[in-house]
Image: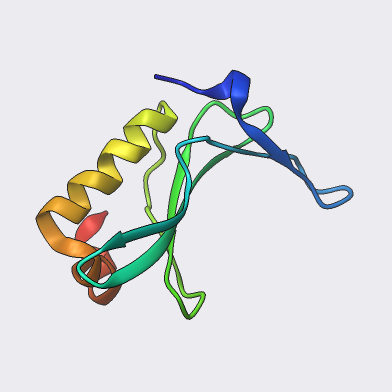
Length: 96
């Protein structure tokens, strides 16, 4: 599922526009922890990036890119299921 038609655009002047997926979450809560999930791509790009941001604004970006925003979302859910939010935040190198 690619939600490109309904995604949100963000840009700062001359910077390329960033297309935010509707699958991004401002607040994903699990096991007493809350993170933001950002799934985005550049306006003229075709690959999606997955980023998790904790309450202290620390960012974890997956090394690989994804063919669809749904693929990125599924990878996030897989990581939560296998590592937990705490595992993602404490040991992000195991996720890539």
